[in-house]
Image (tube, one colour):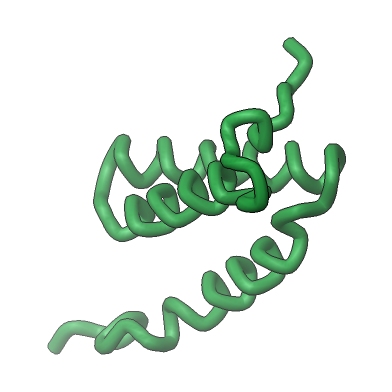
Amino acid sequence: MIPFDLSQFDEVGREGETADTIEDIAKRSLTNSGLVRESAAVLLSRLYVRYKHMCGVLSSNLNAFQEGCIAAPSSISGLGEKER
């Protein structure tokens, strides 16, 4: 299946809005558990791969997302601490 350009759903002068909306919803879903989080992760990975190869619209967003993923575990209190 050949990926189509999501910008065909954008309004004139608002290029990239559809992809940004999908990305925002998927990022919020990463905080859920189970299948919702797994689905959001798959969606984001496919979105980033698609735009990396098609037009690079989300390349800066991908870098910010990666940095956020690296920083997230350290921001969660109690992560990695042993229970007493």
